[in-house]
Length: 214
Image 1 (cartoon, helix red, strand yellow):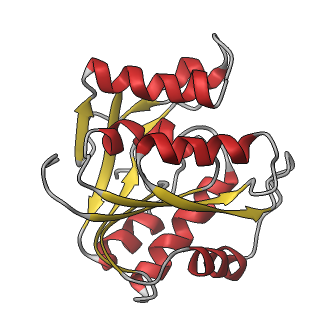
Image 2 (cartoon, rainbow, N blue to C red):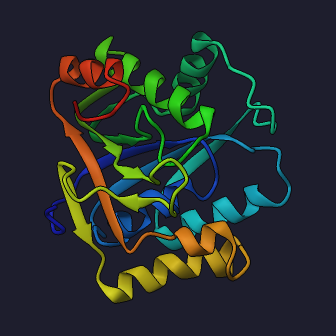
């Protein structure tokens, strides 16, 4: 990952904190990136929404929040609803790179992660999101056997420099105020990984394979 190249990035996630947990170190490691972060849920959450916008300031990025249903029941959302929300929130321009959730999600299990991944890949394939390439987060938790960790065999894998990880960790514990020994604090990955696609057809195949290597 070339840290000194200026790029336009769109990071599309489900929840406030997903941008930090799964890609925060990568953003912090690329100060020349012009990154716009779309968070599709929790826009009306009076606790987490202000923390998301504070995180954007620290990451030196811009962004916006939507308010898709995020109840504990994880009721499925219609594909059109998710896609329309993304298109309404994301500035329509050409991006060097889109980053989003993996079709399998990052842990077992959150349906919104999977739905948003499918929507972004579909929109890229249909040309409704314009970008040179797409990355999906590459993490797994062994079906809840351990905290989510970066997949070493992914297209891109990088152990974060300690100062970068400490800044990322501070966002989780000091800005989002997650408790010590809580899931988020324990999870905060020290390495970050991504599956990389330059061909939308390959991304669709990955989607059809549920985001898992065959």
